[in-house]
Length: 295
Image (cartoon, rainbow, N blue to C red; front, side, top):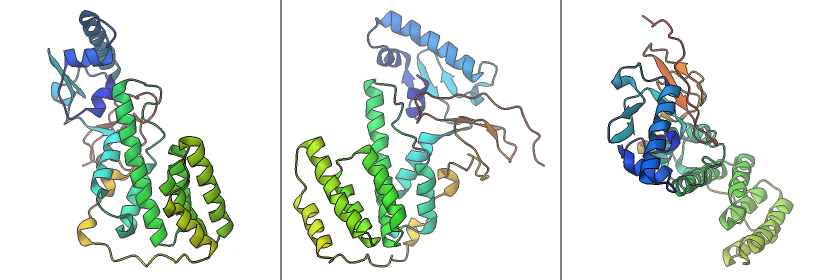
């Protein structure tokens, strides 16, 4: 339940709809009872009963429940979504070094499929959404690496893509090209063979004409290196590292703050509660003991 609320933190949810969504195979009365019990356990785990209402993570009303938008917390999926929104529409070839670093930091948050042990319909949709964002960000970093001639890093990102979808033909083509540009023609040709096998075993199809054409180019040693990167467009230099780096707290101080731990901000504004829902369960951590405010 907590994971669902965090994923839909921008919405106020009715108790009835939430209960029927989470316990669809029970009667209305049973699902509402389970919701009340789950809410009690969740509020106990968060230790929020004795807090002022405005400081609570959960805002619970007689008919509605929602995450407090003003709550001081750090959430990995929020960082992931924000970074994706910031780079959407910007080709990876146009990234500057700072933007590339932000993406690299953000990708460290993706520890595998979202809530891997949950098979509810709502979770399957969210899992696919986050994986698609993950693949797009990897593609952008491959673009960046190729145009900056960092072929080995690009190959590593490509292999991460194939671990999610081994029959992704576009990725096989990119790896073929990167291997060749990295002066490893044999690896490029081997990648083509792996592409053929993956497409046949997963989809029962043959490589596209575009893939075959690339293979012939590599055989004939006719591939050219990418053009040098263009100067970054000024409007694209707005990625905020403090908002996107997993090593930066919500207050932007830059101190280490890993998901699943509670950290105090240096500004003295109080503890930053942190939650990670990229793993099989959400981890809720109570506030750490207060530290003196800086003057």
